[in-house]
Length: 344
Image (cartoon, rainbow, N blue to C red; front, side, top):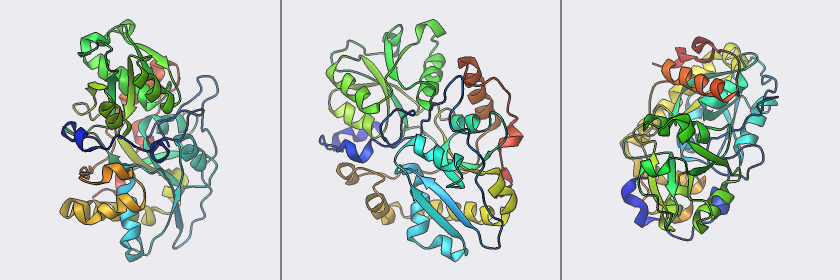
């Protein structure tokens, strides 16, 4: 997460190997974010439901990216919170968003932290995955996604973005957030010009060299880009409805092991309470699990984590965007993908 006032505290020499793990479509390198791509003709990650045997004390397998959104999961494991509830939780590390989705689609994992757009793609033919709660959301001073302008690009205001090609990865939350943020600023469809740069490392390099005047990056890469001379033109801090991440599980796991999922959600709530009460106490988890690159750790402020669940308005907007873009041709009822019964 990035606060506008903390850029000067970020070291210039950030090792990209630590952070290039998830914000990618299928061909993109590993970058720690949540975007996932879908093919307009065949779709991505359609795979079967996770095969989960119903048992008294099932193993809940969760594929996890090394991103701050997953901090409560790792804290719960470190502090033995799952054991206190007699839960068998296996956290399966993955390095990219495609791998994340493929683990669940193939049945090697029962759940993950992802975004609403990915959930829509999973459920385009039948309901396979359901959302049980929020994982993270942008807030007033801590954003997830940033539209950046290159140094000496001549772009200084949002209005300057009209007709300028913005580097994105297509069919992902990156493209969704970009469109929605600019539309909210009054841009018409023909004023939003994007160019596909799937690899986030390429997006950063082209932005840094000035060959790409603007690009969309997730934090913490956005922080590095700013220190290298880029400037923030627009971000999602005032539009939390677009950049949320969520905890999801296979429908089969939820139906056959509802008590275990209920206890899991309660453990996440407890972990978040710990973070709210003594955030500094758990900074060690960020380092041990490499959720934040080492140069950013000193002075890093753990962001707040939300309660609640993906709203119907968020879901309907996600669907509307995917349909307008040609990624989806079906309506997926909100009540079919939301499992809100586990929230207090």
